[in-house]
Image 1 (cartoon, one colour):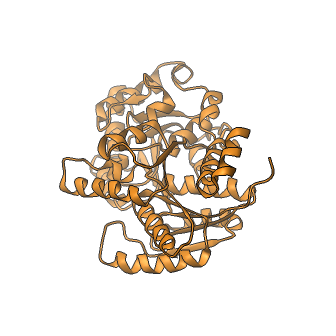
Image 2 (tube, one colour; image 1 turned 90 degrees about the vertical axis):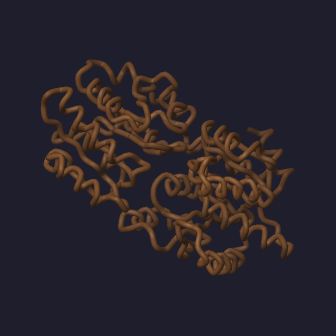
Length: 389
């Protein structure tokens, strides 16, 4: 089979932080190395120094450039102006593929792509939810609106990409059976992420790494840490690493409970640096899709304790002793105490790195996503790729 025509691929998402940003960066790097032209369009008002450094890492791969426009989290009248400005910028880039990530990114990519099609410009429109709108409940008015909008947008979607079985099943339960092409493609991490990271001599007992907002459970981490100290009858140490809108509130919570000197707080940093600060990684989320921090922790040889939410059981194993009931600080404290007191707990509980690597590899993820792009842009070429793989 001859070499496929290079594609012009534009990724659209709102906030350049967390798992969505990690997912897009991996796709950008892998696909640029294959000779494709890649660009990113995202919000200009979020992210800080850490995210700027991450953009610097991938800038050499962005032949279509980095375009940043103001994109609000909530729906507002300003979205109309943003949509028009975004459409003009996207049109000038002449993409073959528009891939929207997260709710706002999905709206921008699919509406802009559909507007291009009205003007007889052929472009593939894809959407990956990454949890996002699927966290809404059908029983609330806001949830009904958001989920109905997801259903409506299927008419402007050429393919839905689900990053785990949980996300696919949740979509079918809350939105309905998709009326467009779908593909299950797991999140994956790269070769360099499957290297053990030793802990420093001054390591703490536990770390939390991620966004500082209630959905991710930093408050549960603080509560469970205090309960773990009481279970073991001795003081412990921990770090919360990340940035977010509720950072000051969590700091006040720790001070009020007398934990200010035993739980430190550090700004967002590269995970390799964060992982050197502890052996035990706690992921106390109230809701997730397929969080990269779990994959990265396992790849680095860390002990991962996580809520039984989203696709996490698909990684750790449905019956893993490392899974705790979401929102339950007592259950989280019980497992945190076990990791410090039960010899061999890590070896018995954590999945083997080679098993994780076989399924959750960024090379596999990027290959399958690219195959889908070709199927949509050039069906004959896509079928040839499928036959060759």
